[in-house]
Image 1 (cartoon, rainbow, N blue to C red):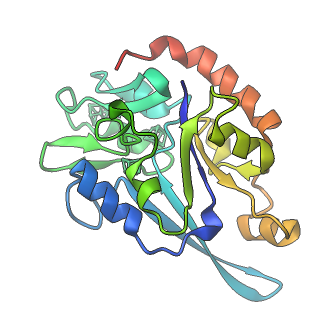
Image 2 (cartoon, rainbow, N blue to C red; image 1 turned 180 degrees about the horizontal axis):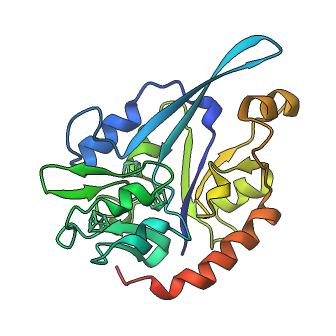
Length: 224
Ligand code: SF4
Ligand code: SF4
Ligand code: SF4
């Protein structure tokens, strides 16, 4: 298994239901700066017309995650399914992982004096056989689809085979697993809205990157 998520990000209305559901279900510390999930807002202009884009985001569970490499105690680690998790007992709050993460996906949970971030709801849902995360289940406009990249017949891979997509900060080389679905209908507008430096992928172009990184890293995956 290799857990991942696709986001039909253009459906996001910034209602923040996902943020609330995540906090509620996962016991995330209260406070605006204590988030496992957030909506990034960028302002841009196309042909002189201002546009605002919303990029719902969370930890990418990167296949080649730098946050794991820098952790001196192995608190940050890979686990089965390609999850990137934090063992709170082992965390010494050196914050190296927070600096190493290009996505700013981590924060300090003061309740337990350890770093926290998205777990893809492993403890609260996935380990109990549920197929969706809290953020997917609660989103009123159906932005997210959680699934398994190793399941070629599954809904997630089928979606990635049928739509073009991009990842954020691909040049960081972490092989992230949040796939932003490229808007349909108007390629020119869409490419302008996300910037011309962003590579648009298909399943055929991105799958080899995942396979290569997984071959390197899966030896480090620990049993859940
Ligand atoms: Fe680590 Fe950041 Fe990637 Fe999550 S998004 S796996 S915290 S580098
Ligand atoms: Fe590891 Fe904790 Fe340091 Fe992060 S803050 S690198 S999880 S010990
Ligand atoms: Fe929070 Fe779960 Fe969504 Fe991660 S997958 S952001 S832990 S609700």
